[in-house]
Each structure stands twice: as C-alpha cells, then as structure tokens.
Length: 154
Ligand SMILES: [Zn+2]
Ligand SMILES: [Zn+2]
Ligand SMILES: [Zn+2]
Image (cartoon, rainbow, N blue to C red; front, side, top):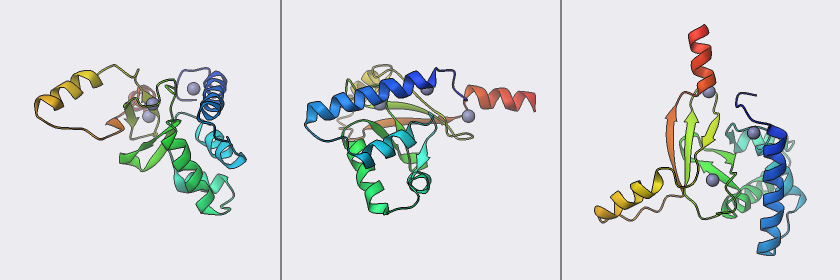
C-alpha cells in the first residue's frame, strides 16, 4: 500500500457513506454499482474505465459506464480529468464539495485534501475576475511522497 492508511477502514467508511447516501437519495445501491464502487476502492490510485471493466470481466461495458455515472453524480467518486480515470471520495457528507486532488503521475495515487483547504481563496479570486467556475474539482499533478522516496533510493 503506497499510502499510509488503514485501508480496510477507508473502505468500510466509504461503503457506509455510500449506503447512507443511497438511502437518503432513495436510490438502490445495486449489485453493479456496488461492484464498481468496490473495485475503485481497492486503493487510492486512480483507475481508468478500461481497468475497471477488466475487473468486471468485460461484461457489458454500458453497465460499468452507467454505474460510474451514478457514483460520480452521487458524489461518491471523482472523475480525474487529467488521467481520465476515477477515484473514490471520502468527503461524501458534503456531496457538493469541490475536490482538491493531488495526483501522482508516477503511480497514480491520489490524495484528496480536506474540502476547504484552498478552494475558498481560489473561488474568491475567480469571482474577482468575474469568472464563474463550473468544475467539480481541481487537480494538482506531481510526484507523491513514496515515489519521491523510491527516486532517492534508486
Ligand atoms: Zn486508504
Ligand atoms: Zn471528494
Ligand atoms: Zn506516486
């Protein structure tokens, strides 16, 4: 595991949040939605639709895409534009938050900052320019702690 986390706990809390949200929205956490969700939550690394599909045994791609759309719209995952991939979100109590993602371009690990870290300042500045942002998240590309360590040890 590249990130220092108790990942079983991450998964458990993400699953609980998803079940709670579905109940609140009055929608079903169907088998396919759950399956895609579990695949994404195997780690904090971004996964492409193709990788997810592979683990779904390539059965009926539209099902995977529909499940991804559902999870994304519900605020349970983020679509990482610069990688065209998906990652689970831990801040589901606040489904309308703007995700702030630190993306490692070596291992695709993603760290999501706490919802309010920098975005308020950025949104304020954007408004000063008369600019209305319509993005659901911002992305910062770079190299994660672990990859930097490996580089140094190489
Ligand atoms: Zn974790
Ligand atoms: Zn998020
Ligand atoms: Zn990395």
